[in-house]
Length: 385
Image (cartoon, rainbow, N blue to C red; front, side):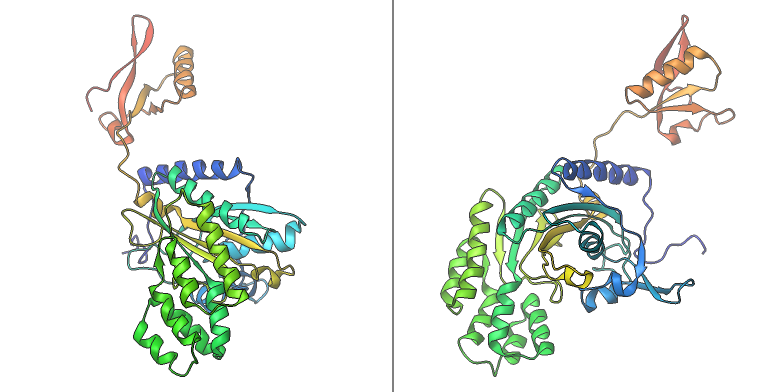
């Protein structure tokens, strides 16, 4: 059947499309008043630019094609964040702090989950140029506000720190391939496999790595980590960053999970995932990625988050019933034109009744009609539909 769409690709019908556009405007306005400037990267780029600094995972998710003009391999973006990093590093070239936001379609070669779309509408915000914890605090507060404005408030925001993993892995002396395997096992909390991989790692690093999957919960997790991780300046500093976040964000539903890791080739510091009360999967993901800009000529501190607007809309409460459209007759009457213009100016939807379609206007959402009564135009319930 020619009209059947590919798996995990969907149309947005009028109700959903209206919700998506309304939410997009609301959230981009929230970014705007906080100084985040909108950018619009292209849908496709040369593959080596599109996946720079993001690791093999992004390459596997990226649709590839050959550019008929240059003969080079191109990709349809699977994630807009590297593109925004390129814009900050290579095009804007600012010396100070840069706040950028974006919203656009991405395309995944494979769905991220069994129910996920392969065409997410990705919205996000990125803060470049500040390495301090203040930037992470700002981004996490902005994420919480975005979910509140979307009417899907975060029930919890799990925070971890990729730096802790890298510090412990360096002390374990693992080769890079084995280190990446350890990263994946920690994320999966696969303790038996972790024990096998760490069998020959010396103490106390072995016990510290095995402890990470159990280090989750509230702010007390940080002190539990301090008690069971090696005590040295680097690890103390990283735990200190988590303490600062805990203190600065005490009014938000934050929690800590020190094995909730992602972006082995990408993230460099704080990482986080936001969850809604009715959502087992994360609604938004983010974190610090200070090294990605190197590939574009400038190693800029960077932190941010992104989410799928489609996913948010699917979690919205059922919208309240609203008044439908007003049906106006087809006429060249100047008074009618003025009445239609006034109704539209105040926000009413007015549909012009093209001739020959009586009995069908309820399909267009019409529940009222403009009729001429005693020399004036009046709105009455739609009859005969």
